[in-house]
Length: 137
Image (cartoon, rainbow, N blue to C red):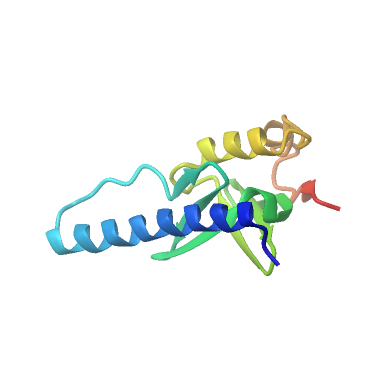
């Protein structure tokens, strides 16, 4: 059961999601070219992420685990992050618009997370280097 403060947080995220959907509808109707600098939108208690034209919302306090790893793409590695939130999860990567700001936000919201994980994971090259950088347990 949610407390009153949790309901307010969820309402804040839902309003943010509604705003994104309205803007998306208006923008598609205008048929204009829109430059998008981030797939993330933030509010005090969480964020919304747009992946494959679908929106998912996450509350910071409901994230139970964050895992990071590298995917070997033959000629280079790509850093990826798995976010586990209640009954859902998503994987994002460093090629997505807004990645650097998102990494900064996760470090702010999870101060016990290793603050240097993003520089440590790159070595050695072409290895997965899977690690859990946050766990609620």
